[in-house]
Image (tube, rainbow, N blue to C red; front, side):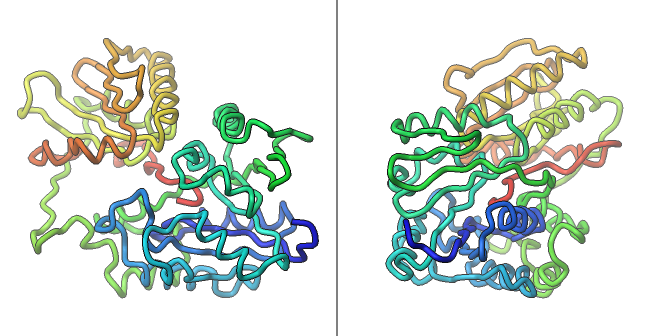
Length: 362
């Protein structure tokens, strides 16, 4: 990559919707690495997500364009919509290198959770042939796991300085801390669906676009059937379920749902469901949850599934906790099986925060 003149960041992902966490992270990366600009390239057909669950590409593209307008260092490309088939990152990087040759030095930007799953990406070992990789993290909790991924994927690596890895004669992998903003696309979509405010989570022009086009308000409607999801209010009898949901949130569990199954089941009062983005993520979440709850005198009666960490079940007496690897959660669809159960509005409990989803880059 010698002779490249412009240092250019590539920020991909579904961006459904783009939010201030994405933009703030990109701003910090551009300054930390002295990049000339960052190109936002929304994925047209993400290979690991079901098409019906994703907002149309043109809407997502329009929101990104609105979000970056006014920042001369940010640019938006629609190139993935012009290519048939799934939107694989390696194909995008190849195309960028064909187009721009040695005039650009590319830096592919991704979140730490996504990097832990890089071994399931198409031709992942070749990514560093076309770019360097910047892995964004909010803390060091995933760093040792990420180093293990590098050791497996690029065993010839060297580490000339902390948080920097040379992968043979190809690009480098950098780890960079960015400001921790607890904003997620999943929680934004859920707020819109429930009629709650998303001000100051997305740029105002993006919020207005979503409102004008009624994005996410119909997300859970299918075949013209209304979403009849019911919500129950937290109270003293649900305090344990709320505390467990908070612990899952604090330890990076994603898309947390608490099903109130009182009166529907004889063996538990609440199902608490969440997921991680990889089996390593699930394993880490479950271990941290057990420790944090133990410190609060909430003890687990039994655990199943830890060896594979695709579906870990934890028994907290009247609360049964299910932590899934994301595709396994979709396959078993416990929320669908218990469709008659109202959802406990655990976020409304005093001190509860919004659940976190995909980090910057999600």
